[in-house]
Each structure stands twice: as structure tokens, then as C-alpha cells.
Image 1 (tube, one colour):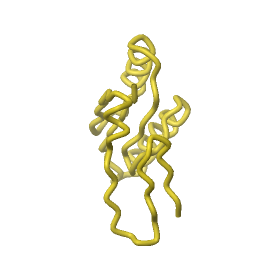
Image 2 (cartoon, one colour):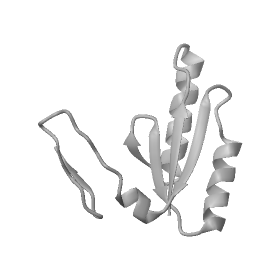
Image 3 (cartoon, helix red, strand yellow):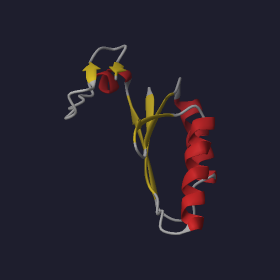
Length: 101
């Protein structure tokens, strides 16, 4: 399964930006990788590992903003469609999804 993490955090003040950076770095340390800005994904093996990751995110959530977690199956994730407006980027849509720039 894939676990997608969507977040919308404020960046108005210096403290807000620090909290945003800390949360983003925390996700990277947990093994997440960026799908889009403020959207990160990570593969999880089973329900127990998903629960431990979810608990860790809950424990390290920023004081302000919204964080949403969405588990999806590999088949659903593989069916994700990328619609790209920039002609300099070619998106190859396969199970081994590769973005060439």
C-alpha cells in the first residue's frame, strides 16, 4: 500500500515557516518522498506499519494547519494520472513511473 500525506500549513510568520520545515524534514526522515508540493507518499508493508507511521505523524504534527493521511492500494496508486502543462517534462506512466526532465 501507499500512504499519502497531504498538508496545508501556514507560512506567514517565522515560527510558522520553521514548523513547516520541521514537519517536512520529519516526513523525509520517515521515508516519505515528495509527490507534489505539500503532498508526500510512502510505501507501507502492512496495517501495523501504517499504524506506527500514522501514530508518529500524529505525535509530531505541527501546532497549526491541517494534515491528512490517505492510504491507497498499489493498483490505485499506479492508476494515478499526471496531466502536465509544461512541454519540457515528459511523464512516462507505467508501474515504474519515471519523470524525465
